[in-house]
Image (cartoon, rainbow over all chains, first blue to last red; front, side):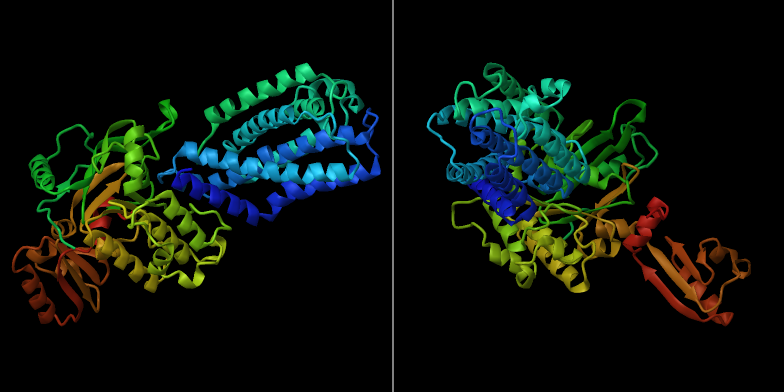
Length: 244
Length: 345
């Protein structure tokens, strides 16, 4: 690990750790949603065990929170505060800046999963059929898709508008995305759209990986959809991002 | 500090950048002199445009100047003159439409050159550059890591914080620092890596008197060890105190370039203030022709011929007009600036 990269990674982690709103978004909200719906069983899941529906959905929500909203909002403000411009004239370079950002997101995701999986087990989720390597692949694709989406928005809009857009998209994808509300409970046209959103695809492939056959609505299609988002969004971000 | 140039390079602001100027000989002489000293920045015929087509704006239009090692070069000009655009091209932050730029002999627009240039270049932006929740000591530590050196010359973050007088505020988040403290922290960040060239954009803006002394002392220490400093500022008195060379911009062009003394000498002036306004018609023609009324009771004479000031003093005495101020000498930088740019802020 080079000195500049290590230094930038340390700064990213330190700033994130001091940012209460980001911690609320990435840790507290997913945990609260998980515990509330895990204990109350108010959500229709369509599966025998509601935790089989909820656990992959909340992990998908957590990935979206850190890779899209947290990364996007922080980057938007860094553009606005000219932090990116200032870093641009140091020996750090853009590739190492981006690598530090991605690794910070991955660190947060590890913490999220390390919290959510034990909570799921405490809420009687049975992980016997979980294929963890496949789930890791889903998380990787989801991170690329949501990270690209977050940076595409952050790289074009003013910081305050970016903040509103990221939060608005977060709510919309949370409600539409098959994360905590099953696709079949959405109105007809909305259901068709939701299945092709990155949130819906990530939740569906995580159900396929963590629960097993029959848990996902359209596993094959969802893997393709998620892979397409993961390939396209970083390219869109790279093509449209403005550093100041 | 020392100055080495013996000529002023003055450019006709309305002439196209490629057309010959009336002072070609002086320009050539100036360039020959400058070649013997290490140029840290060489800008030649730089053009910067924003937007395309008819709606595009040419912010910098054929600018040429040099900055040298061990000297402070002040880049002056009214708002929108093209100073920041020019400096940002030198820093590798902005693309140029035409011309050439060399910083420490490297081209900032070339990726490989830029990679070699960044560890040797210090930058202070006009504003911002730091995350609001970040504490000064953490930011300086971060930047020391970005300019990582494994040898013993690695810098101590605490020493840098102390140098800019922020030891007592080193754990205060950036957003709670005063404007002057933010400027001093930005300056500290520009010094990390012991740069060979430093670009400072409005370094004393919002800084109190003591802070200005600190910043001036730091700039002097930079030039003493051979670093070239390029200083963009609106604050002419500040530029006058620290700079060796001056480049005055207006409307995207360079109006004048030269050593501070030569620029001021080229506009020698006499300043006269009287207790009551003069009636210029009453003055002898050989005096009145030279006198320019700035406001009633305040006059200037530029490039006064020998004996004129003495004759004026005698005439005033004979007519019982008391003098508040009669000062002859080099024009101030402010006088030169106003004369060249027509008082635009």
